[in-house]
Image (cartoon, rainbow, N blue to C red; front, top):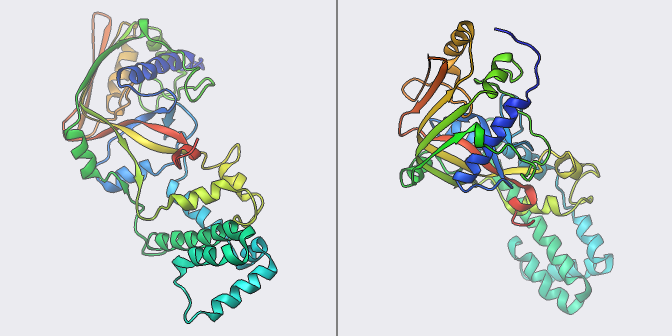
Length: 374
């Protein structure tokens, strides 16, 4: 098989057309949707959560063989550790004189007010004694309580006996959602496919990293030959659903909102910290808001490419790796891939047994949108 160093443009073009077709047929927005390459076939909570915890890259195709992404939990925990709101910051915000008066008032009380009531107690006192700083003081105290609460929620998930970061849905919940979701069936041909992704959320050319099969470099001659042939795909999902992802009890959106809202010290412990996570090349500019899950996948692909007998043998030997456009690696009793050739036409089939949720893509949002903003 020739392995010339050829351009990947042809594979990228048909994959972009497949991307547009999926968005069109499944009512997905090109402003958010991202393909997973290869697809994800979890069997339990840990496998499901390990993937949806990943911070998605800024690309239409999340090829996790290539993009080694950090975990959302790890970045969130690191941010919570970086934030600090010392008492000196509260004193600076309200002024030394007001700070001294406030402490005298607290000491005069029969007993200290519960910590979670301090913002309200302060505000009621400050409206009479320091109205100009009533709001900023209340905000500072509320932020201190928020950080303490956020760090406390993280404690069970850290250390030598840490719990695994959990999410909703859990695997059984995902299965239940799919059981009551509708089927989707459609066909696609490269002849009428639209490869233009310039209006998607990734406006630049978004390259493809795989060729015909999982792990195959897209520049191989066999892949170019395939991409330039007449290709048709018939796909059916017995159930399909877009499922929202929600972090578990370890997560507090208020902590992340506090971090994103200010670049200063405090709340950060260094002047470069905000840029590390939220700057132009920040680690946490995007998050996975939901995933596209399907069950009962059935796909048939045909191509009239003139493959040599040697190339046919290679393609048949790679069936277990899973083929374009879904890249579903074979899995005993779950996914079966077959390749056959007849009168110059190749046929590929992929069958996934019902009862096995498969993640084929997700909706990516900017971190500000993830927190309910723009």
